[in-house]
Length: 319
Image (cartoon, rainbow, N blue to C red; front, side, top):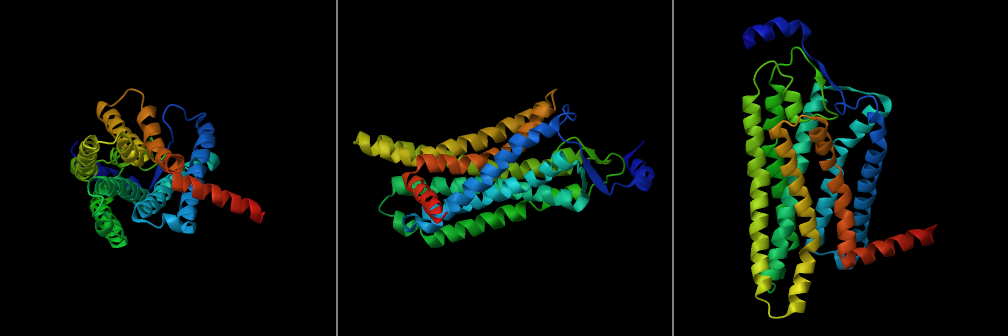
């Protein structure tokens, strides 16, 4: 039977909502996952709020490199909030149904925030490149105006490029199955339910991923290669160590973010026999970085560490 006949015959059962099935293979006890996930989500919200308050309170942190960190904290809170409230609602209250507009909006939001996170890492890599390789020109290049323009460009780039992904998904015909074997509206999981082909959606999805994440990752690698060459030319071991230490926290977060994406793409491409692995990994990739990023910066950046301790002491005195 061809596609047009299937769509026509199934039109009387047109899908008006999707049902999130949760984590495949563990439906009977998946509600226990709500405890660690709720803790991760709470940690992400609290830790990023602490970063925002610390940078706001401490005048010494009112610098472009820390403004990028403010942007990262806001994006992290948005990224985790696109999926975690819905997942926790599903696990706690068995609220599995999700409307088509809400589902497609979640697809859009996930793509936008992931692209923004990647873009911020690129901006931070550029910031460190200029600071280490062109220190005398740093104050004239990395200004507050530069930060505003970079933030605006990243919002426009990711906001516009992500639009066709949910639009193409919404244009497909959903006339039979409506059970998503996932706990969130993943583009691939949703379009796999369509009665017609999803080739155009898949091609655009992969193209956007390569254009946005691939180009960002490539430029970050180039930036740190140039930084490493500049550091190797330093005659002072102490100066080289100090230069690398300013990049250490950034490198840790970049490695985790992009390694997780590569592993996720590989598990999807390989069509692993245990579907729980890519689903769980997909969820964790949207909540672990937001919880991890502020902790790494708090531990590795002395100014932020001091500011957070001061904020905690002030909160204690007010009590």
